[in-house]
Amino acid sequence: MSISTTGVPSRADPAASAPVPRPVRRRLPSPRRWISPVVLLVAWQIASSTGVLPPEKLSSPWTVLQAGFASASSGELGTAFLVSLGRVGAGFVLGAAAGILLGVLSGLSRWGEALVDPPVQMLRTLPFLGLIPLFILWFGIGEETKILLVALGVAFPLYLNVHSGIRGADERLVEATRALGFTRGERLWHVVVPGALPQTLVGLRQSLGVAWLALIVGETVNADAGIGYLITNARDFLRTDVVVVGLVVYAVLGLATDALVRLLERRTLRWRNQ
Image (cartoon, rainbow, N blue to C red; front, side):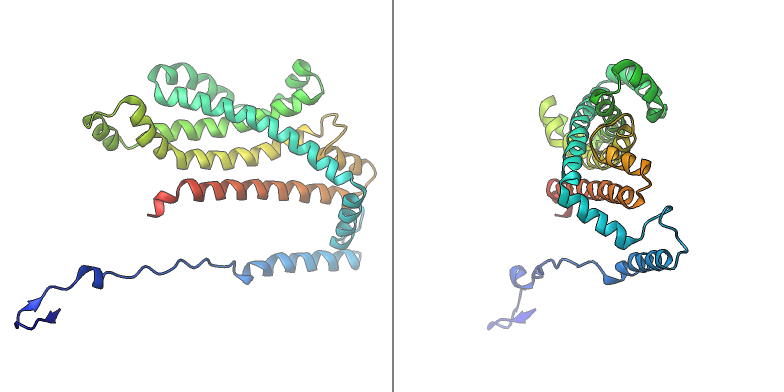
């Protein structure tokens, strides 16, 4: 507080006293997080070099790296990558459409919940990988079985999260918008969709993880292309280095898709930090 020329204490200027926002600094990952992975790799290499870990059980990291370069140079890895990406993409689109549609129907309507939720919950409790024999009988051993297996794995996590997100919308906000005369469409757009979006994105991350798991299993069923075929073929020839290369590719793809969803989450949920 300052003293004016008339001797009367003047009111502090709110603009002048307001805290100046500091620029947000992005934290870099701590190098300590790399210690344990590097130690594991070194221990793995030492165990392989000393014969403690025989190559027919598991190849050394250096051999795996060489096999990865060889597969990439020959184009075999790139072709398998594209085939697997196409399968998981098609299955994800089908499963996400079904999961979101059913979740919206059961979340927005009491009748929808009564009709949709019981059969979905019954199917959800089944281990979907146990349905492979039936899928083979119904759809054969072609691409349909692999794509539908991925779709089935994607649909349930998205359904549960979309349904729960809609049901968990803030009732006070819904009542407030109803009192303000919002139409049903406006209430959905301004209250229900923003409220359900965080949990829907969580379901999206879970679904992508399950999609890669389903693809790994599906591609072991009479596949003639893809990462799974690469792994199965390498297993027959005891090429553990190529098997590890395929598993690393699966892991990288899973991490990449998860990072994309997290980026989408930061973009679409920016309002939560304001």
